[in-house]
Image (tube, rainbow, N blue to C red):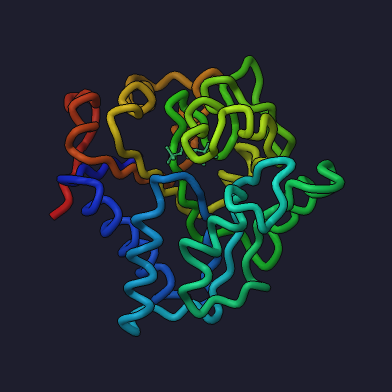
Length: 252
Ligand code: GLP
């Protein structure tokens, strides 16, 4: 895993957005695997600015998102479809038909199958953007004795429900289930770019870089098996990574 340390969140987002820009400039019909949560918001803002400055054309870009809450329709303000429209798609020249966020309504098993098909349809993602849960989850693959390779229905852990309660009026309103890409779907991407920020991610980041152990109780540890992973963190989190064990590249 390549580790890039930046001075702050803003610089991390710039770095990530520039990496995404480079991919789209090289390949105008690039396919992006996208993530939600508060972490990627700054990346999306930067991509919108690049588009507004006529530096980035999304007209042929295709996207597939990691996950969606079960029970929230696409027009629910906390659904991940709504999030993607609000933070990115409504502000760039992407064709909505070229964007895919799995539905969390209706026949969940067939929705999960559809998500798996969309990962591969027209070629695998050129890049998968990831955040990380403070418990080490990626997508909504929660720590457990076993992980599921394919897209599937996931029971959210109590800690994830609590962490995501800040987006809802009450913790009881947080959905308890989600459909998520499995580790196999995430790994289909040619490149994985994980962004982490905030001191509450200290343990997750430290565990990710601690040793070469892979353990389903830390789903992010499976990233060690992918050949092309870049992790971007800011200097606050970098204090929790052992510099002896990792080549740290400081962004300029
Ligand atoms: C959610 C999403 C993840 C995201 C995580 C962290 O649970 N399913 O994809 O990485 O939250 O979110 P945040 O960036 O808000 O800390």
